Image 1 (spheres, rainbow, N blue to C red):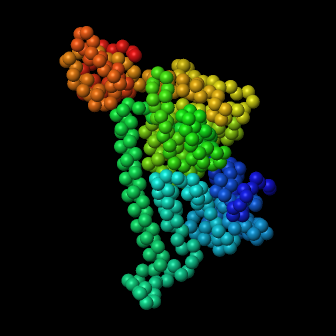
Image 2 (image 1 turned 90 degrees about the vertical axis):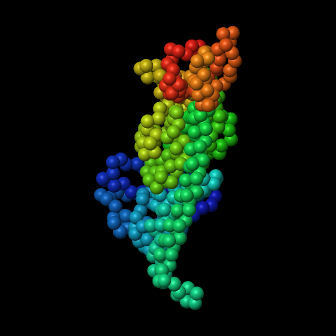
Image 3 (image 1 turned 180 degrees about the vertical axis):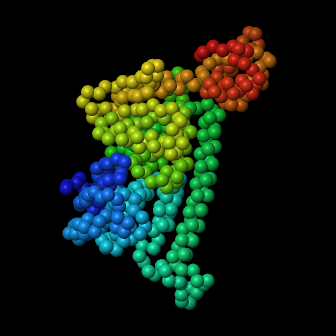
Length: 431
């Protein structure tokens, strides 16, 4: 089997197995892309099927011999498994194959470590790596089981392995503490945007669906975008002007993937909050991908895991430039509301339709009105200013305060209730 190989990288043998008790089967194509994205140089892909994984080697002894023959023949430096391996399976495989063995989780962590740019992203990657490594400390090295000895090394009898585990726990606690501080700062920024009545729209989707290209095209930003898995790791926020709504905050986030390890979702919880607390999600889909329906299901599963499944969603079918008959358009439901937009972020086709769909979906929830408040409604006026909803103010001939306001409808109704005022008492005109 031949591959488009990078200029350099570890020679790697890839292993992909199908199991009869799996709910769904899939090919090794995505895993090959993952390996290349990590900088590996795939020399062979070993496939096979079993009833269930072997408890000792994950694969059977016959398949293990086949892998070893390829490793020896190709002088491979690493064997990558498209599955999650237990620590004992990883150790046994390394002992039998006499080379490094990395499972799917370790490979994704390696890619994340290469992509992280911000302080928060690097901390999140390190936390996930430490949590993954903590179960794999032994790795067959017998010296880790011996107690420290010699001049200056005698102590209470702590083994080297116990020392390493203790240091790992301390580092994990330190990182979690620092991430909690970053999370608190993010919450403060989100509250500030909420007080300013600036809606947030978050881009989500399967990795390499074109989210960053769409983000750049819509906002004029210069976020790194490439045709590779996990090109984006750190979240980026930019302001976007949408007619009838005004300014919104658009967030570009990390892409999702099939079998995204649970510890990664947990480690990136703070980053993914941009999605779970958004006012609208733009679910970007690679329209030309033959696995697009399966990818949509995987993204929906992750959204549910991070608590974002209740947020309104607009599907964005991207890359229509790769479909011969597709044209930019908006698909609507039975009530006439947009639920899907077809566009090409690369060619800039349909971006105006996307903004139109966002305006239609969010326009119902965001008030953009002129309010006429008499003197007895001073408490409501003060609350609107405190909420950051007043864009301008002047007084009319009758001495009434004329406020141009913009804020979510639900927030306006809450302010009315707190001020002891009904909508009927406030004269309004759509601005």
